[in-house]
Length: 306
Image 1 (cartoon, rainbow, N blue to C red):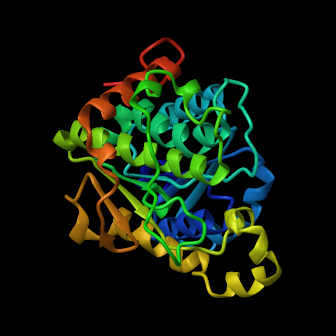
Image 2 (cartoon, helix red, strand yellow):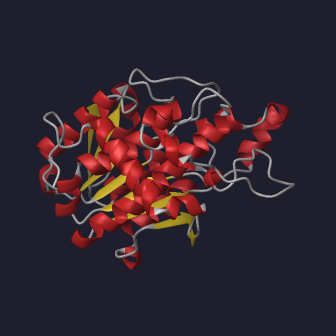
């Protein structure tokens, strides 16, 4: 079977621990896996893993932290693959201080929100043709932004509807807290996913989000409170492995029993409710409109949209 005749799975963040497992497992099922890498050299180990199985790997050089990078990646995928059967939006990062992308977005919004929703919007036709299963890898910080949760009540991430009309207003400098900014970006992804699930469902496309558990990845090193840094090694050993974390996303992407399940959020395998604001359709509509304006969806230079 040639790469072009295999089912296509797009996996972002595949040069990292959990993303690499997801990509390798999908390739092991015989899929042609496409990933976008800012540093393609980091994908060499993934190439070696995929080469041992029945699938294949394609690496597109690019930076999904920029509008231009998202547009270019979508164009490259659409040009080579008329249909996409799986999209796993796994790319993500936590930043210890406020930074702004070249496009004027706070960096958590640029990395943890925009690529997932942007690729879903820009690959609309390909996803519909493939009756795709879309999985957004989220974080349960969206339901509780406290870094130490032993005492007190959960403190969900918040969204100010007045800020949703302009993505550059999200996570402003005033009152900026890095962990809350990260959680807000993940909440935005889930909120957008609920709206996308309704629109794509008529063509058999599913959109779900999942918190894979507390996985020992690079993000953990940034979010562990300073007081706990001395026992960081012990903390990591108590966490899930990348393989265990990847299983939650792979389940949504491949389990036949879930082929029609859409518009849901899971904490590992347990369906769970998200903050009430995420279900507000006016909020969802405002967020989508702002995202489409920012990406100029439908303009020349973007991937075709149905």
